[in-house]
Amino acid sequence: MSLLVWILLFSFLGGALSVVAASVFLLLPDKHRESWLPHTVSFAIGAMLGAAFLGLLPHAMEGNPPLDFHRIGLTVLLGILGFFVLEKLVIWRHCHSHECEVHTPDEHVGHRHAGLMLLIGDGIHNLVDGVLITAAFLSDIHLGVVTAIAVAAHEIPQEVGDFAILLHSGYSKGKALFYNLLSSLTSIVGAIIAYYSLEDARAILPYILAVAASSFIYIAVADLIPGLHRRPQLSVTLQQISLIGLGVVMIYMAHSFLH
Image (cartoon, one colour):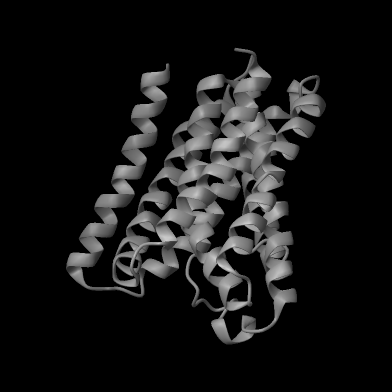
């Protein structure tokens, strides 16, 4: 199987299939959905941090000769700051619940343009995901698989939140699913663009991987972890730590097994 087919397959898995999984998750009774969603978020945190620190950054540092750590570190720092600015501009927004500081239900009821803005933002987000997955595959096929797994782990709880927001914005379940699937396909567009533009630019691949790592770190630390602090009970905290650890272990084992 050619590298491009691998890239397209896992870009699709990270995008469209996560939407389908989220839609199935949304069909669960409210009681079960509300209890399971925080668990998927905790697992996603571990998967994204594991992919960033155990996969993307080590591969970004590889080379002959090895790259300067300070340049890679600076790229990660600038990437985190860049994602902060983008989020402030409401270009890139990850909401994992229908109740969050930026997207509250009252703001979206009857305002279909708000749902449209969400879909545009999701389309941009998924396009970038396709670029990051492609960059990982161009560096190492095993790293590409691990990166796609981390993207999918994050996408499922995000898409659940997106579905809730679209429904509150007046979209029917069918239209919410259709438009979410459509926006998720931009990951394939991003993958194709990146494949043909980055294939002959291997020198910048380590920096693309560093940006990918910074995006995973930012999403996990800035968007996902704060939500876990809303439930400070000891038993819940132990569950969160266990699931975060499970996400890290899964990425570690996947990376080790693939190698």
